[in-house]
Each structure stands twice: as structure tokens, then as C-alpha cells.
Image (cartoon, rainbow, N blue to C red):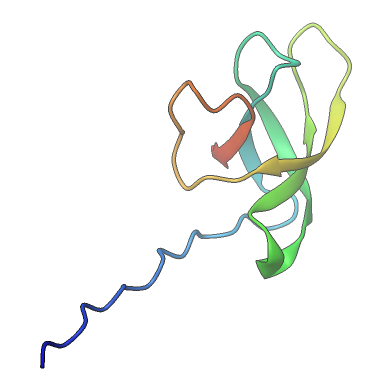
Length: 83
């Protein structure tokens, strides 16, 4: 009888801590901009809440944006990754 292949463990993304800087890409901005993590929803989701500081605009809170361990490709419209 053949052994089933192990599925492996999903890679753990190092979660940003509150107050840590991240880079954010969202439809609200022309270019990626810097943001500060203001909330982390724990292990239930990869989303974080950020306070973004786009140049030439007032700061903006984004209540839920997916966090990635590296910059995702351009097809992902809303994303945050480590600065």
C-alpha cells in the first residue's frame, strides 16, 4: 500500500506588530505608500488595519487590508507588506 504524500505546512507569515511600518497598495492611492499598523485581527485572517499617509493627502485609515510577506504581483489591487 502506498503512503499518501504529506501536504506540508502552510508558511507562517511574520505578523507585523502594532505601530510597525508597512507599505500599502490600494485603489485610493496612485503609488504604494507608507502606513502604520493600528490593528491585527489575530490568526483568523491575514488582514490588518492601517493608518496610511499618502503624499499630498490627509492620512486615511484602512480597516482591513490583506498582509503579505513580500510585495505581491500587480494583479493584487489591495495589499500590505513589510517596509
